[in-house]
Image 1 (cartoon, rainbow, N blue to C red):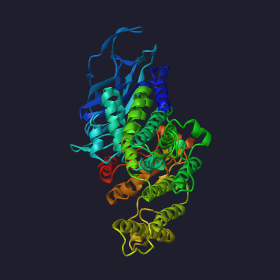
Image 2 (cartoon, one colour):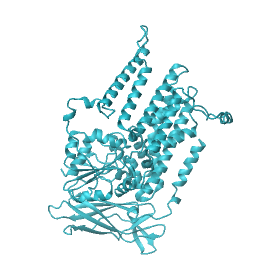
Image 3 (spheres, rainbow, N blue to C red):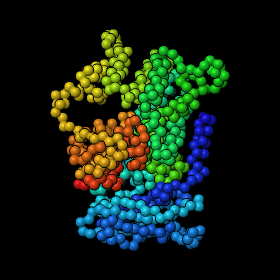
Length: 603
């Protein structure tokens, strides 16, 4: 635990204000967004970074086309500041909301608003006037700027990164941007509580499911001697290791614009990590025991940190690796925190928000870790059976991790083996004695189910199926006549994307995808395949940026749109301009995604 406390102290020092010694770009220091509240009013919101301020008399507004008339802005009173450059002036800090009257010609639905502002950094630097532009859609319903985020997440799928939700006939905007604004505008206790809630929701997404057998296998691997207190300590070490990693890696990603976890999703790293799980599983099958060297065991004999399953420090390291490799998908809360860090340079609040979010993700794991101890009520065959079951789960995690980098046929055959061999050990092929007890019959039934599932997987693999969830789909009579899912056109570079946008004559949907992104595959399987969604997508130009390799061109594409990794979907109009407030980050169900497509299509 001393190591964990040292890690937490290191985190606090790295996230301290002293780490922010340099000024940031004016677009980040004074991040601006604008939208139409109604046909005659535009709302302009500045999220001003900590230690920065804007001058109240330096705002200038221009509209394109010039036929749009702009009135006098309405803004709240600011603070009087004795400025070294301009004397006593009115300044604004934090969030600033301006209302701007507009009169647009009849029939004009969109125009471009340019807002020029000027401000300074408390460190002694003042910026020149900085123009920022926003596309104003007078026909679109207004987007709530902050607030209600946790409620919207709870109303949808757990952990779903839903930038839109139906509310009073309207559709809310990009949720990752809303979450970034929450960090700016809300109190620190509310921010931390919200992010803990986000973490709880993310704990029930497929990206974090593999962590359950990892932690459970560690606890079970320690054997019957592990106490409930010891199980909780190991679980806490795993969760804290994961949380510290999320915070540090998140801060690094926000400041650099690159996700460290994406760089680790390659065949060598995944193979090494999968091999670790294979070795752990083999120890549970009784091939050998994982333990410290004899000399080191005797030196640590007075402590509880030796034994079969690993020390507290070792479990914390496993939490670190799990956070980096097992859960690389980007969800709206994570993207929002990274966006806030990137825009403001405030690594303190952003880092602690990510740390608390990871604690929320790990809260169910604490319960799982303690419950794993309850699976070992006594020494005997029962305990050995439980260990072997978790050994199979760890093999499943290893296969799941290798899925993006091995052939699909090998994946199908791997799942076949993981179903058939346990079925044999559960006596699925052996006759039961006449006096067999209830539990014997139950486990034989489980074995028969696994045997049938494994046989279906094998038949499907030999018939050409490469989908472990639907191995026999290729044998359906109607399989060849199903409606075709809209096909994507791949773009590999920013130049290719810009060239394609210049030639489009219809709305465009750009999907950021990676083979190792679980949420990306969820979108393909459960959302894009929906007939109503597919019909809407068929009316658009569909582009896919496959960033699996995470090379320089892929990083440039992601950086161009302020994304930190997949999944992410960007929409453009028929002229090639990005549609504001329509981004989708993370998984979204078919119904709300259909509403987003309706807005992108202008219906």
